[in-house]
Structures are given as structure tokens and as C-alpha cells.
Image (cartoon, rainbow, N blue to C red; front, top):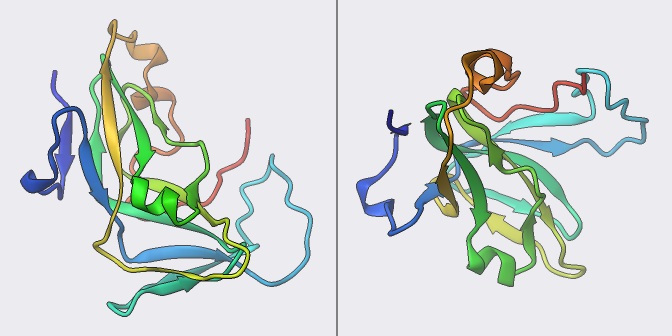
Length: 167
């Protein structure tokens, strides 16, 4: 079985990874205080924005959810991990550590959790810019009943997706 990646540019294939680019939909935190229940599928604290070609400015301390253009289909013997581009990290625009893609994850863009760690400077992002890379790992085949293809709640996500609640 092979990894299949839709909407990927051949020019973005590296020796051990593939560069990923930002899609045009983001979710930003609404400026209101509320308690977030991690067990609920409530994304009421987020606002969905369609970025134009002009992009979006993330303020100091700002957080966003974004997505890749690439759509992934992983077989049951390959997993992947998202890694931030070093230029982004060197500008203190960080990705929270939720970039693991389990074997069997399929039909989905990758939702990314970004935070601007700068205290005094905003960060400009725009659709189509390189935002990271996916590294793949071969391993023993996961049994079908344990595969993310069967058990995963984020399969089939075609755009940025807020948390779906802890089970």
C-alpha cells in the first residue's frame, strides 16, 4: 500500500518529507470569555474566516486553526507526523503538538493549530504559503479494527475542523 496525497505539488517532495501549504479557511478565537468543555463538540468560541489572497494577520498571542490544501490517504502500515517549517518557528509562529496522523487516516486535509508567540509583532499568513512538512513512518500493519480508517473521528474532513470532543 502507498500513501496517496491529493493536491500535492511534485516540487514539494523532499528526500524524507513533503512540504505542505495553507488552505484558505481559518478559524480564529472570538473575543469573548467562556468556559470550553473538552468533552463537547462545541466550537462556538471560534469564528470561521475565508482568507482572501490578501491573507490574514495573526496578532501577538493570537491563535488560529488552519488547514492544508493537501488531502491525505494513509494505508494501515504508514503513519505521518507534521513538522513546522523552520522559518515559521524562527518567527515564533508555532504549531501546537497535535500533528500526528495515524495509519488509516484518509480523505482529509490536516488541521493545524497555530499560535503567534511574539509579544509585540503580528504575523502575516496567506493561502498557498508553505507552512510545514509531513514526514511518514512505515510500521507493522495495524489490524483493520484498530485502524484510524474505522475508528478515527477526523476522517473525511475537507476543511479546517474544530475539536470534536474527547470520548
